Length: 148
Image 1 (cartoon, rainbow, N blue to C red):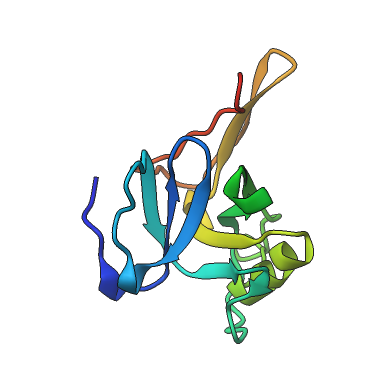
Image 2 (cartoon, one colour):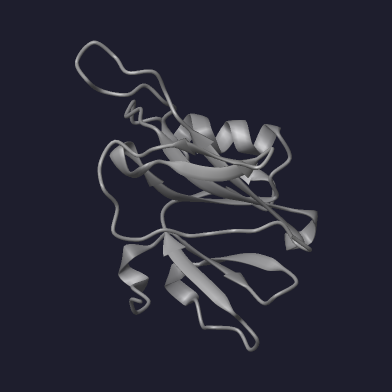
């Protein structure tokens, strides 16, 4: 939908039908066989280590991709917080989220978005469950379990 923006920095997650991989944006070139690519920032975990070096104190709801098993598994991580008194939603900083994901075995992780666009819908026991975003979103990424 959009061209690569190397100046945006961050990372690009690609998927070739079998494996996902996280690349740095600045030197990214689309690999042969890629069927999907998304660029966002920041890279939260790189090679198993947290990648955000300092905490700016900005807390928000977050959406991230966590790659495991050499890219054979992708976890979609949604952190929805309880609303605070000022209408703001509590959630982790990018620094804290990177550490959390690394501690839980993410080999690589990319922040997709945060704040009012954070939402998710999934099927559970024949019903559709929703944690809706606070505001409308223009784009969505969908995943389905392999073999489903």
